[in-house]
Image (cartoon, rainbow, N blue to C red):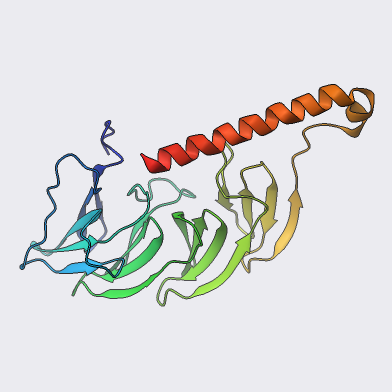
Length: 246
């Protein structure tokens, strides 16, 4: 995948399995050159039900040397198309049997590659959604506000897990990691959670920044440090918001 200054406005991805070769072309409505345009020969699948044609993905699906195309449009939210490259990494695109599953902005969608019909589409999180991880017959999806377990075949949300803050960590911690018998999570404030595959909390551990002893001995300095920490958090949140708005 090539990285350029326009990467967040347009990029491409190719994924394959034993049956399909899928070429995806993403183009934001803010892209300098809008090359994906409606055509009467290519079916259009609206992600959001409205008449606006913005932020589109063109899908070229090839099987046995025959290529068919469709266009997804009406996509809202920010995302990057990427497939699974290493074990235990997340992905936003996956081929499952004769279907393609995409996590794009606010929407998780499953599309039949044989007839380009939408099997199901859901907006599971109150905010945006990110990568997902395959687990048994389901996927574990990281949303901004919730962790979700979703059935691949039906799109049914089996459970949601909500933490104390958003599932974005700017300190380099893995927000989500699938283990053999449980799932490890870190939120914005570095709070650690361990949950089982039924979405039940096993334990949590909040990051302790300052000790009580320090507060009693140096209360003014403690308050100053807390104030600085709050300023840092606000700056981090503004930085993430700026990235989303670009």
